[in-house]
Image (tube, rainbow, N blue to C red):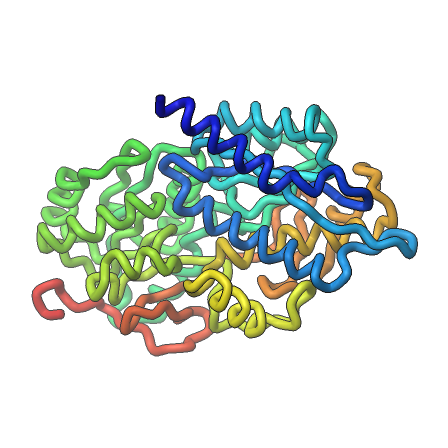
Length: 398
């Protein structure tokens, strides 16, 4: 029964978002993404962003090609957080729904097979949910990513730690066994050791793990100054809650995914305070926009529509649609090869910041350091929008 209900849900999504596909003068974007399953929490962030970007573009006249205006629409399918299902649906979007271009899914593990389908059919895909080097190391000229290289996610954190007093000496690196988190961990270890830190714990756990008791016990025994965790939101929530329960008190806990999200802060309440994170964007930034006037206008419209504060996932999703719009208009055609060439040469100011791509298709840029203070998230490095707290207070002293 469950399978039937999910299938009907997918059908409903298709009908809901493709009803305009029979209208003329429409450019169709296709997206297989996680509406259900373990990645649906983050998948929703991209869906909200994609929908808002398309709504704003259509409200302002759509996309112009040779003096003619086209509306944008998105055809969605639920990939159920499964890579195999996602790549099957991307193929369906291309071969049956005849979409013009593709928007990416969430997570590196799903983006990799999806990007291979895009290459096979020569359909450009712009994505903001996958950062693993494995996506961009295959010579695939049809994939473009808006997240900085996973291997450098914690680089800004390690640089920040050189500015605190006393400078920490020992680091623990924990990471899930999926493509993105393995890339983060390998890169972090390499950079940390090069910068003179001692990595005293380097431990992998199964993606989706909910019990961190064993590794937290090890951390408590080794007592590293800093704990860096590369995982996804549910894992970040469980790790933080159990660190409190076991009274594990490093001088810093930093998580790749979670702290920037409003749901993370809501779920943990005051226990979210002092947790560090990394992100490619923060709400304190203010860039000139393309679809929106600037970042501030985007945040205002987004919060009014969805009732939560946007994070870097949302901002990257907006930039994905902006890049496609800009490339189509510069190409002056829907020819996929010509649009792909325009995407590759993008130099665009967006509410997410300046978008330019490296030759491998990944954006030029790096992450910033965030910290949750008074249950709000602030960029604390390299721009100090609020003074960071380091070392963080022990659980019993908060």
